[in-house]
Length: 153
Image 1 (tube, rainbow, N blue to C red):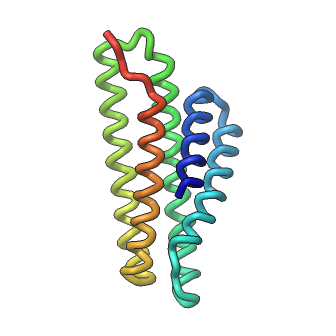
Image 2 (cartoon, one colour):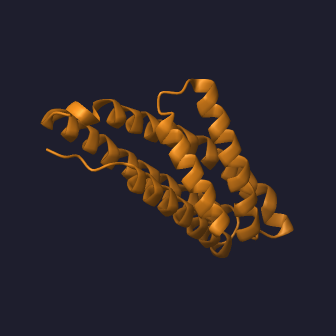
């Protein structure tokens, strides 16, 4: 799990520093993170041979949607960085509301795919998926929060 923490830390830092990066750079970061993440998931989630095709098809579908949320998260971090020195009450409220909405959407996405995976494979495989995704997401959230300075007045 130390590998996950290191990967998350490096990625969060790179993405926050380069919040204004172009789409190609974002795609590159997400592709690199996605490959490492898939290897970690493959180590943790253990579908049977009969379940593997169904699991990985749903996992790939989930990852495509997760990446959309990741791009939104990066955009929000970029907005925060741009507005940090002169953020108004209205901007702070709008930014926070978007972060809350994105967090809820991300959590809902994991639950949706937990249910799909459970139906297509088994409750054990679905629980393994839920556990590792929740662990990784929590690590990402912690690294982002650690790297984002608190607003001062």
